[in-house]
Length: 477
Image (cartoon, rainbow, N blue to C red):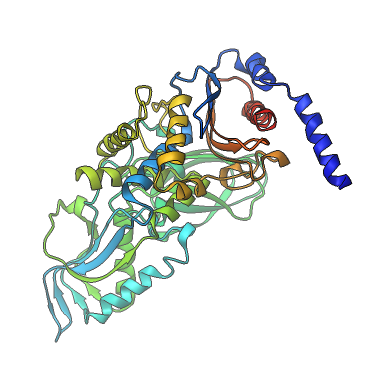
């Protein structure tokens, strides 16, 4: 009892220490905000009563909170159990007596964003070995054609046109392909010593990803400041910047330039090692300008359900998965696996939900483009729609991290936030944003969004202010 009274007393003191709106005023008056723009909105999810707003209709660069727009649309339109299928088959004729295939082995992509992903390692365990066994079980011993990937499920523009050159060669800027594999990035392993230009490349995985990159790296300090500059479908490029010193195994993650060709090479290698003779080199439909022809199915593998993919997507803020889902929306509803068709589908969804989107400018599904723009009011309207009318609200909120989870691992550590807040974060240079749901001590559930652009000074100061603002709301509303 004494402990309970003490807790109530401390909460009362906290309320007195956080007079209403003081935290927000402190943010506005901080020197880091001298040249900044902010859009802020909080509303009651039940009554729709506005709790607080400031420039709530001002459109700003949102960074990764854009993912909630994409995933909300995907859950409501595709359903949480939607899956992606990758198939293996062959064209031409198979002579079962001789084991000779007068045709190709075809790996048919179906837009699976997580094929072979480390995030779903158990689901895809030994999937390439299983494919090899299934191919051999058909009796194929000799292939007159080649291993070829049908990568025509989506278009051949892997990355949005308005992504930055600095991003697209790195793992977080990996593009979307009709067949994605291993999260579309590969690992370059380094051993480093003291600060210098000396380092040793100890390995590349998968080995088939070894490309003609020029290394302009230095070894310095403790931070990873190494960047890969390369383009989709291109085997050349360079890496520059610095990587940390005194590492036995530092890993730099680079985007795979042609994942469909990579998986064709991997299957080709494994089949040859298994004793299957293959006449021609591995390739893809894009390279060969191939058209679909009858394929005799050998086997297939389905992805985990969409809700599981979205959970990882929002917890870990995976750009690749969001861009895949954007194109999948276009593929399903407009028969066009393009980002443009996906964007139209999202706008259609917002219209049907009665959400004003005049201030929303959607350039991608992930928020990596600086040309994206949304406002706090529109985002909160979406969150309230999902709470009131969303068929899959539970799956949606389950995908949003709480304190100590995913991208919030090192934030919102105050005990007041535990079990009272879930939020998607967004961050890029001079951009910090948070949106989600919180519950006040009085029991109200609120939806909130705060976006800050073009602040000066460390981003940690902005995040600290945002935490204080949301704590104030929890305590006083």
